[in-house]
Image 1 (cartoon, rainbow, N blue to C red):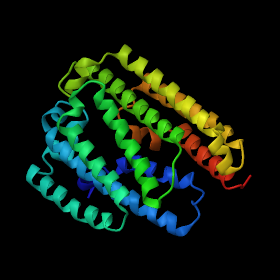
Image 2 (image 1 turned 90 degrees about the horizontal axis):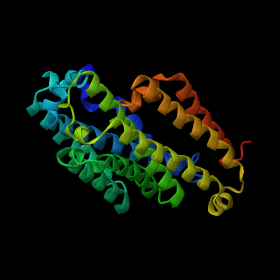
Image 3 (image 1 turned 30 degrees about the vertical axis):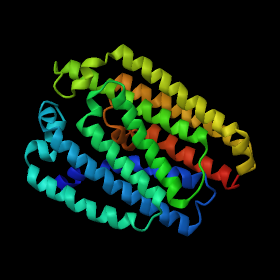
Image 4 (image 1 turned 60 degrees about the horizontal axis):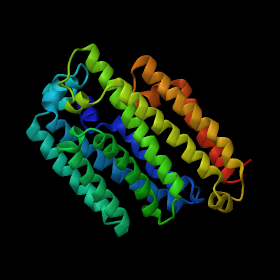
Length: 291
């Protein structure tokens, strides 16, 4: 079971919680039918993500074998054969399609776009400098759009921009950690695109992306549409949590090179966990007039 847990990358499913962002800001969080629909959308993206991870691991066998940690992945280590992995990936398509039949066409387009984008990423885009991190960012944006399409609600342009920048930030920080690990192990075989990056370049990109996250989110909290929809200007008081989260993440990456695994940071760093929980609690309290 542990092998298949790793094969499906269930720990990485945390990334699909971006699907819940539109629900949180739609004023429908506590309405059962909206929550259930979003949860089904979440499961759909989780299965789609697992499908993508399996295909990507099959393609990356040689590169993973050259990596100090990725060599232990089920396919690279030989615990799961390529043939079996392909069969499992094919079987995953069945529940994904069945779930898609329960949604509207726009949500299905988002899922198909997510799968298509990640196939292009696995076979080509991840080898093209800058386009690789933009592909990662697009994947997160499609999750947010999918969440909005699933429950048929509008989503603020500022919120979409915030999602794009935070996705770029996470992608660039991942490249930074990969560069550091590759340098420490004197290996460039783990990911070919790293040859086109430098730590200085990655740091500059991270700074721009981090600034984009903070500025776009701050502008979202004070935008006329936001104040009108929620009937309050207090959402601006959630901005410090976002700023602290960004700075904490940068600290962990620059100090300990932990950016290669976003999920590990989110699930193991106590200050980060407390920041996320505090942000959600305060945001819900403000939006739903609990304060």
